[in-house]
Image 1 (cartoon, rainbow, N blue to C red):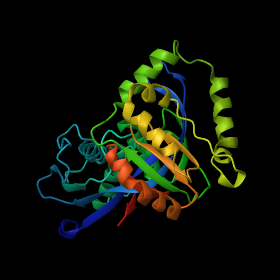
Image 2 (tube, one colour):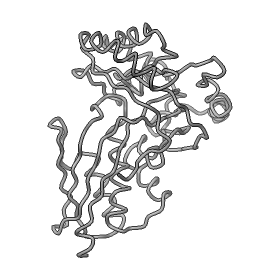
Image 3 (cartoon, rainbow, N blue to C red):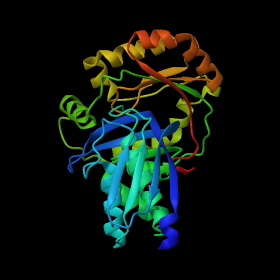
Image 4 (tube, one colour):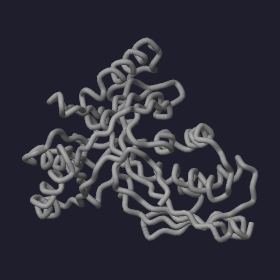
Length: 311
């Protein structure tokens, strides 16, 4: 135990963007059947873990806008892992927050997965990836993706994962108004009210959509084939109701070297893809003042091959 007390772990917890988000329909369990491609990007939070002797989960952060109590996904993840493993260890956790909150970038889900991975290591639990993914799926639909991360197909409510063998080298520009956030639950509810008038029962249709995304998803994102398209069904709802999303998409569409643009997740963050990181950096430099004057925070990123990593 004395050696464990000295142990300190730092984990990089990256955001994601959606390169495809298709809402197939409403399920009888209250969730929605989805077909997605998710991709990690190198806009990341950092979590520091250290054992404490009080058998308590103590969370601190440099972000004043986050609850640090039991409703936080980091705390929920830590307590679930303690219960599952039947241990009495505690942990001091510090979150350095860089991913904006309520942004459609799944920062909270990433932090939850980072907590499962970090405490599995800190507490020497030796749980395998399958077990961690199973635990993650009970905490939230996006969380299992981050256990391995990179680029993956995500089916079901997001917990059915298929790793894709691809390493795109696109550069990314993100835009988000810091004063605007969007509720994922509310967005799905509004989409459901407009487009899902009955429960989904056609299993053959679901499987056909999955097959189509397996067969064509990466081709749609391949610049080599001069065809780059991104589908986000939730954008149909959010863009019409949210001026910051509408304006961000317009601004991105006007960038000279933009290959394609979209909203990520339930928004309000929007992104544009460029052939490489250098092109994205040049575009951000040239347009940074415009973005700022229009009220947006902006970032430039690359794609990541992995999700959660140890620093």
